[in-house]
Length: 491
Image (cartoon, rainbow, N blue to C red; front, side, top):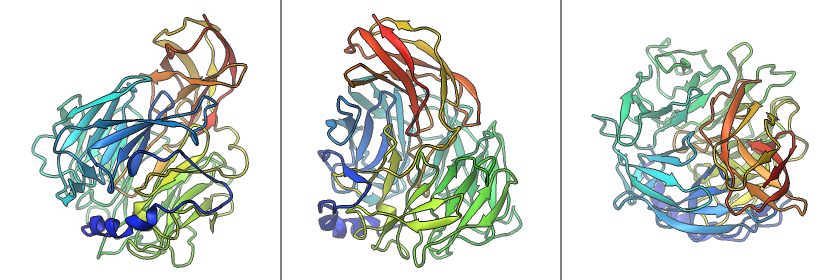
């Protein structure tokens, strides 16, 4: 439990506002109106950002891309305020498959006080417009949600944990939940949930689990239907300390010749350690480290080139961070270019999410989003393939259907310890005219949320009413990787 975080943030506020030092591969986004923390990908190409720590934690803002589809000179709108009395730090969040519904649940802090609140809020996004928030009730009988992990499973169910017990629940609509299966560990707190290609959900335990060999190196797995947790494979080393029980991010990376079905890179918490889950054999192996650096809470994000970008720092909540890339093929963790977040910040302050441009957005409770562009091309075979069913659509039309393979990508792409979830494994749809101007449609109500390779599914999409008639190229983009391009005419 990170009970002194809020005080530490106030002390660091003065250093977080410095301008970004010149660093290869990083660019800046137009400053936000307030200091922001977690960010979410909306399904019309815009970015939803929570005003956090040094701002008003009751508020959200929306970043729209520039006319050429880039975000460096994008524009901000808001604030969009949650209900009075709910202003959380370190909470669960998700964009639901209908595209319009955003859930924010719990919080280790509320209004600056550490309370592990059960409060939640239900956001409704107007495509290409604003949004509204109303209160959402917690699962019946829960006294905490707090800094709880969550996951939007392949079957479309939103799984919410109770930080401080074994309990889980499935969202069943506004103010309604269905009890889920208890985890096998002592409690959920400080672990994270990671969707796997076969629809199951992985959790690495951070307590001794008497149900799984009385081990300090246990993991467990929820079946694809969400019925029961079972013991998973044992890790090769303990990745957490009993004194704090912090854990780092777990990112599912792409298949390769070395990992034919992909794998999970799990960073250690307050321990200089990592493990790699080979999904082909479903066994753990010891992973690489960078001397003196760990990730006692912190973000990781999958780059289109197959590497995993990590924000790491020394010890428990200490400043001195650096960015590093995990290369699954080489089996290495190597320092890369920093922006102004490092070395002033600690990993737990970081948030990272892939943008539709293939850049990874990174920030640390500040007004500045930094965009990281890795080297190389997207991994072969990872992009979606769309199947056009019509080459003419009506301007402003809704519920157009687009089929394709791998529309959800092959990973949730972005991860943290337990506090935040910023998954982007759902398709966006991008149009470009002959002048290079970019328009996004609004995608929603996908037929599947699976990240299994070669999954055939469809998404519905609405056209932006402001999009003029004419000829366009069209493609989907998921996890920053564009699909094949087809021609389409809007009339």
